[in-house]
Length: 291
Image (cartoon, rainbow, N blue to C red; front, top):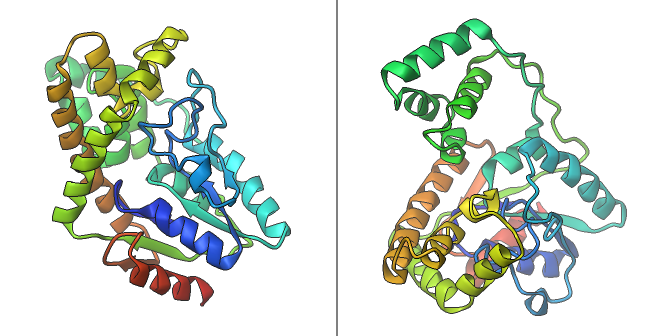
């Protein structure tokens, strides 16, 4: 399993390990699951996949949604099927909540608590930012996904975070090796800035325009992700392209920082200092994977 911030070369390392160890790649990026969202999600083009099978990429139409629990229900049979053929599943992506649901399982959601919901609604009336601030404290990942003005979703997320959860259903039958990339921050941000410019120059606007013309609403979940949101703003003439690029660069750097924070909280991860396309780091990761 490979994790780390966006722009750290996770896909390059995954390809190397899959090639060296007889593996197949299993995606846990929440944007790469969508068909037609290629440029902005940085999917590895088929011609660059070295003939290695890639799973859970392009499995959803853009109008669909995939919760973490639904992702885990899709991914677990894929892992088992790969293993049954004597191949090694190589998980790679950046959506921490997907990975947690897959490996640790999710406990059943508790029922709604009317008294708590009433108190939260009253609090939001007094201070409109109170709910989002509270959720950031209880569940930063959920706060990142939910708009600060979406009161109903904020209340439910707080309710879930505060509730006493039932036992989880962890993944069994696998020896899990967790490898995380921790590249130099300055170099990482430089790569993020460069990749953002390349996305806009390499077809992001055209890809987004094609999705809109096909009838996908501008507020559809995939188009609210980094890169696509800024592309929509350019296409609808809300934002000049230069400003959109700068905004995307800034928000992607912030997202990378949040990813590092998320994965540092995970258990049993071996951190490697560098990028996934570094040959020396790749050899170290290969040795770890063979232990």
